[in-house]
Amino acid sequence: MDLTIVFSRPTVKELTHRLQLGWHSGAIWLIKRISALLLLADGRAVPEIAARLGVSTETIYAWRAAFLVQRWASLVRRTSPGRPPKLTATQRAKLKAWVIAGPEAAGYATGCSPSALIQDLIQREFGCIYSVQYLSELLRNLGFSYQKARFVSDHLDEERRQRWRTVAWPAIVREARRRGALLLFADEASFAQWGSLGYTWAPRGQQRLVKTTGKRKGYKVIGMIDYFTGRLFFQGSTERFTASRYCEFLATILAATKRAVVLIQDGARYHTAAETQAFIATHATRLTVHQLPSYSPDYNPIEHLWRNVKRNKTHNRYFPTFEALMQAVDAGLTIFQQDPAAVKQLMGPYLEQVAELALAA
Image (tube, rainbow, N blue to C red):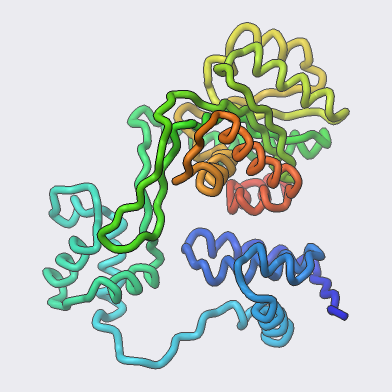
């Protein structure tokens, strides 16, 4: 018979805070360990947790036992003895600052920082030579991960974004709490039948090939997630996004709950069209809408949901028929619809510290 462990609210709050730090630092080992403890606190069974995190049940039991005995010390990775590092603490701090600043700031005429460039930088500045394997370990220990860059618009109004984050967002959270409302983030995504490519492991020198029909057809999905609970609403279609379709989706959500709805959306044309504005005005007693700052998809946590579904359900996959694509996308979204806690976990540390300040005010 398995033991049931109950964590106090302060313990869960501290675990959640440390999970946020883990996401910021990219410490996968810490993210998995704390996620396991939070799932235990949520009453999940050990086999279920092990399957979700991709570890053995023995590992989950070991993590639980270590936390019960050692508490927070069990979440600190011990450094193993070995040869001394090639770089001093001061040199490592300088290297970290250079990598954060970007290669152009270090005198390189490129916007990317591949391993070879960082090897050259270390040799140029400190006279040390690192192998690729050891360099990867060094960079991970400094808080870096190998990732794809993303574009950011040069039209960004940082002052407005900062004002929204520190003033508007806390006020929205307070309003939704006071009204007992759903706090929904809305967005749309398109999933292409011709496929999408993502990073994958493959034999060296043998690039993985993925078949494609080449058909320029996409499955359009409107989605909304509740910031407080992780509840997901979604609706798929083969038609393009329009104000009429957006209003129809809003109507289904209002019909599915008696609670007030506080909606956060971006500036897409069908979000601000006259038809949409008329719908919002008609349902003003229950529906309140707030606009995100322009060019701020990073302020919308549903983007994490779209990326997860694409990575797990459409990347590097062949869809011979459009129906096969729709089934794969709907299956991925249904998993999250049935597991709001997983949606909450996907949100990560999204604006959480600011929201906590708002709730405490």
